[in-house]
Length: 102
Image (cartoon, rainbow, N blue to C red):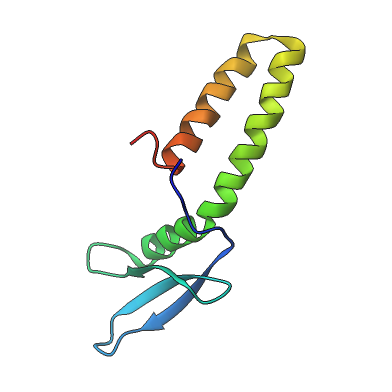
């Protein structure tokens, strides 16, 4: 399992000395996760959407891990095929988030 910086991650919009807009993704303790720079190929809406998604990554992983446990318990109790398909999808996303399935 790969290590990652636990959330929550926070977005902080800033402007560089050359006037470029960027969003800094940081932890609650002000530890830098990454900088998302706006460029000519990214619309303002796309820039915000990308930085929103990056900042939400820890919460998304936590939610998927909870879903995995809940779906696994439903599968064990009821055995319908649909729960197995959901579980495969959720586990694949968790593996990708952890860097295990790249």
